Image (cartoon, rainbow, N blue to C red; front, top):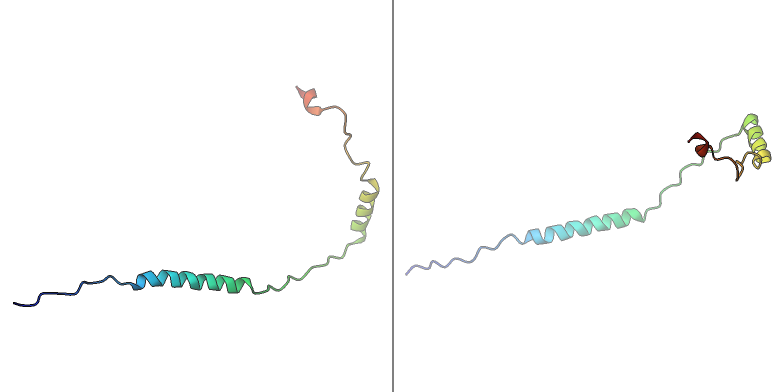
Length: 80
């Protein structure tokens, strides 16, 4: 009688370890890169010309006069 017993063939178990390790390494890389401080962007300071300063000062002086009246004619009702 010939021995025909063959051990069972197991599937490759490495696939169960590959994805968790890959996910763990991805999580670690995200964690490490989030801890790195970014350099601050340089702040640009624009020099204001005399005309811009005149307009700003005029606006600050007259901003209460530029508001629309709270009560008045509703222009939508006049057109109907």
